[in-house]
Length: 94
Image 1 (cartoon, one colour):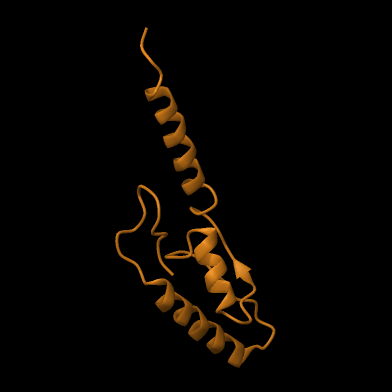
Image 2 (image 1 turned 45 degrees about the vertical axis):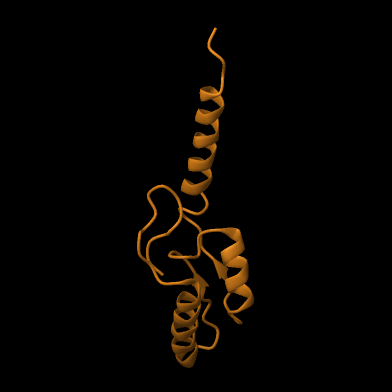
């Protein structure tokens, strides 16, 4: 569904979660009309956080899962680095 929207370098513009859900289902139904055993997953755009993916999967019957890239490696790394830097910044100077 396009570039991941969350994080410090996330896409500024993307489909909404509702529009992405509709688009995934449209693509899935097109695929299933040709091949009933086709496995369809979602990825990108607003499918960026566990909460959003959980909401989406509940609303997308037949979708086999989610493929994470930035949502699995970049976003948690950004949070960890930011937290570590903030902890160092809070140290008192002697």
